[in-house]
Length: 400
Ligand code: CTP
Image (cartoon, rainbow, N blue to C red; front, side):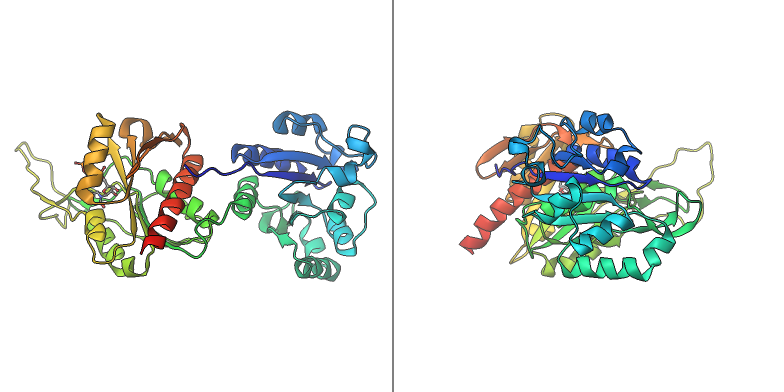
């Protein structure tokens, strides 16, 4: 199995009202497997107690330039050594000005100046401060210096005004930082993914669908984007937001999904079929609502095309990855399905444990046998799956 080494960041918290969101950010980063060392400015300490960050990160919080806990009293150098990035969230207008000038009058600004890793900044301030020409100049300068700026967003502000300057939500920052740090194992690869349930019309208001939430397919899309892929996500009806950067195509029925796949498959290097595709559709759906009656009602169902098997049978197919939702005999059914659909990789799970849930336990079946992934959140599992896809895809490409 491809392993991803643990990433670690310094999270710099400066004195904006959004400092409370940095607590949630610490948790989200940790949830994504990233080690977090929190450094706070003096002003931030007045807003959120360091103990909160210490509890969430599992590490002591630093503020002081000459903190005796750091090796050789060199906290301003030591704390960012070996780190993959410094993330400043929230970054106040004042702190951004300091960064732009290269000032170093406290621990966090000194760490930023003395760093040898990338710097990511999430601004948070009142809309007038954000619009001020001085801030505009400072942001432009940071961008020219190669600093990554996340946000800000527009919305309600702590001061009661509405406008640009609100810090991005913790989850969005964590997602962007995780993507930034992820190994780019699929750089440039074009990945086509199907996700979610399909819906087959019975009449004007009813249909046949299933309990798939789309979460697994969307997590695979996000993981592929993190790995540097260009992602097209063909999605059945779900309530999920498409991951930023994915091209999303909405479909309803299995036959719509098939058409959408057919249109795009020639441009795909990898096809991941996560959708829970309905195996049948109604032979003659009714335009009007079927009225209740005491008589028996029979639905005549016709088989849907097997999208994955069709793609895998193309003359020069993309690297195909199937999913299998089973309710029993996982290994036997999954291996049979992999052979029947002729796909190099099949990810199998127990439907009763996976459908609609936030976490999942996958077993991957390929030519080398079975690889069981530990139970984890769908996002974590999706990253491991993508790492495995990247490894097999590379091997397959080198043989072509
Ligand atoms: N699949 C597909 N088109 C279909 C049915 C399934 O592309 N009409 C894909 C799914 O996206 C998945 C794989 O085939 O990657 C297996 O789907 P699954 O529902 O587990 O199996 P089925 O082939 O439908 O077989 P069964 O329902 O008998 O288990």
